[in-house]
Image (cartoon, rainbow, N blue to C red):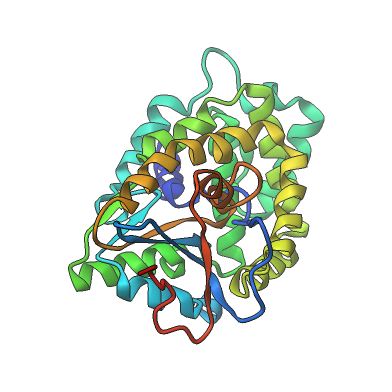
Length: 312
């Protein structure tokens, strides 16, 4: 139980980072883009700055692209996937304890099968997590634990990530933070996968060990310069490997969030909305959904003092 709680305390940070936070915008951002932030304005209302986040960064690459500074400075509030300033890490442990255990006489070994169990176990042991030590946890929970260990090994830390940086700053500045969903809703999306899909998810997580460093380097570079075409390729590669996860993790959530963002546009003040960059993109991404609703997200330009130029 102690080991379960050790992992569960940090699962909240990784629930939305299972796949590297890749993104696809309707068109590539201009060369002078100041980063992955778009502004949306509805006449008579306020401005929403929609920012694509990377939830974990390392110290060397923790400085946020310039567009975040302008958007944060102009916003009266910050909205994130989770209400980060009120997040209780013990809630993740409670959720895993209640929902993340294999029912009956099953185990990871029986769910994965002997050959796949051996392959995943070899990688997990290299990260310090023998699968027999978490044999009763469902595969989705073990996959998140492996993701945590892989990213930690690379020096990536949620404390350096976009959300935590903004949470710390908003707390100091007295800016309120709101969440688009709860931790239980995030973890429930993974818990709701069938056991075969969870097993495949765990297997792919283990298989990424040899390539994750290169892939993350490419993703972070593309994210920083808002190279949405490069990010598209990264996202589609992950989608093709496990399409069963893409719909609940990305598409369904985007559709639930859209009315919340539109409601923010009806306010007279400005809001910074920060979501994993993969949520901005594709035919069902937030940028495309907003455009289909008659709005026009505009990339924040480098050197812009105020990226949201409101129509007069």
